[in-house]
Amino acid sequence: MPRSIDSRGWHSIVTVTSQPPDPGPGPIVGIVGGSRSDFPVLEAAVEVLGELGIPCELRVVSAHRTPDHLFRYAETAAARGLRIIIAGAGGAAHLPGMLAAKTQLPVIGVPVPTSDLGGLDSLLSIVQMPRGVPVATVAIGNATNAALLAAAILALGDPALADRLAARRAAQTASVLADLSNDTPLP
Ligand code: RP5
Image (cartoon, rainbow, N blue to C red):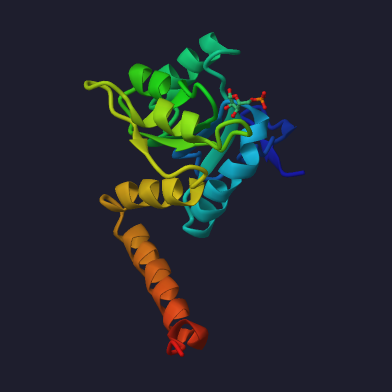
């Protein structure tokens, strides 16, 4: 333990305060689902954002079960450092639209597939926002594209991320061209 001598010549123990461990950058993309049952779909977005080095969080925020929580989440999102919200919900899927109504952050909606109507209900609920409050909507179940769209928006102000995104797309193109079975002539 380090010691020092004060003006009266007394030895005292110097307390060395260590900095708290760096928690790393906070999430800049908030991924929310109306229920944990949406997580298997939304985890694809977590994976893509992770590959691109974009910090994100995944939480349950339900428009009809926890409406006050939804308002708090949307109202505090920008101040917490979030730049984009990806919201997935199924059925009468008002989560993305309600979030968009309470924050100016871009909201990307993911229609979650449903057992009765295959997700067409979710798609129409999310995509048919009346004018004035937009929600960008991806295909049914396509959380991968939601993450890629979020990355493309963030890349506008982040050249290093733009490079990573371009490299990902180039690798995707190369993998299609490298698969010789894609080029088999028809009989
Ligand atoms: C919506 O209801 C959720 O987004 C989910 O897709 C759907 C069913 O929720 P659970 O009954 O599985 O919790 O709010």
